[in-house]
Length: 209
Image (cartoon, rainbow, N blue to C red; front, side, top):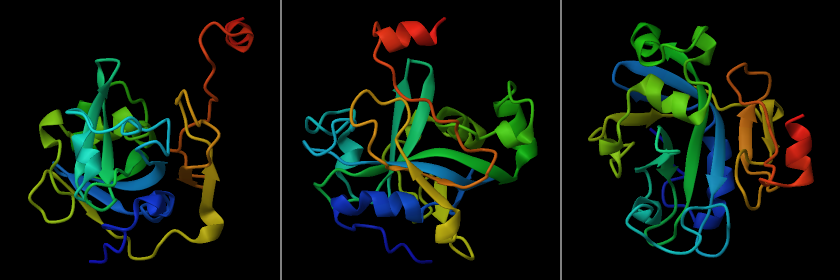
């Protein structure tokens, strides 16, 4: 297998996020083709990153080594999965935002009872994790050597450039216009973009009417 993105300079995280489109995520009997990713840097370079202000117990995995899972909870309810990609000590990670279940849909459906269609099983970062049956206990495990529950496998052919879209990240409160969200054009599993609206702003109030 080719994992050329492993240990690349942290500044190359956006290219890694683009590269991971089309890769296969395999865990607990389910295979998902990755259709949407987001890149995150750190240490003063990306205010939307969990590593922006330095290393903590929560974000330690982001600081390497590359090719490991950085998992975290949002709203105390959902888990999101990121793959670390920078050299040790240089925080960088790619959020796995969405994918298309290729195999194991019969296993993914009970994990995602709210999904009305198979196309919705892994459509969104929390849904992606649920469809694969990943738990927080997988934090820090490898995604390349088979020792962890999740493994990433390169596609037979990469997603061609003309099918790759780049745009602003979703749901972040800072640097939300940075075009570091990558997706496969026309794929129904890709998120609908909604610009972050600061709470209490006029725009926010207008969006509720």
